Length: 260
Image 1: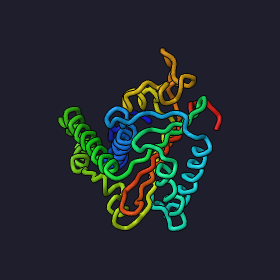
Image 2: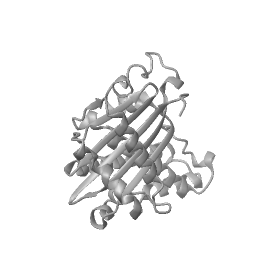
Image 3: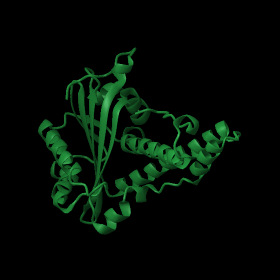
Image 4: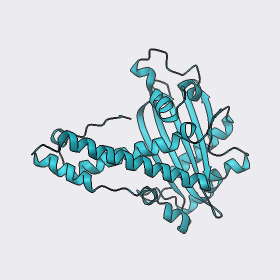
């Protein structure tokens, strides 16, 4: 996951409006990353290692099945997948696991992270998600105006104009109204071939890497790029249980160079 993707419309080519949409999509993914993992830094969440390995694998398998049950190109789960979705959203109740916290199963080179939110915690998540998106988008607009607003190049001007028009309602983008009013189950995924594990832990979560991945897998004091690189895939499952809105996050991380 690159922190500063190439965004120069002169060098990238293509429609400036489409390039602006792509940039906003990159910002959205960063907003989701922060809202999902900032709990230890902002919301009194704790990292809880020692998660049941059998339960971890079961959740991993159910999430993989649900990913295949999405309707077309949408994140909406089809009717046959509702049973698995409902069970996953209820795991914390059945197993008496605290919500908000990060439940971790790990072995050398591999980490699974599970987090459940319910009720008011879901509302807080969306508020934080929107705040991150708004701040990132406004910051991007200001940076681009300051750096390139003076240019007379038509492509730059078209890119800046398209960027200025961009607004993202994150609740709508994540189908929250349809989840709450229509009874849908929704599964979004986010993948990065390489994410900097120190960035995720220190900058986003506010913890030392060994707290998440364990001492055996944490990068050394003077790390190489390979030491910091982890494969990352995030599943975000959302739905209702009765009148209560719930979310289940599952993140799979694997150290670069490790075998699947």
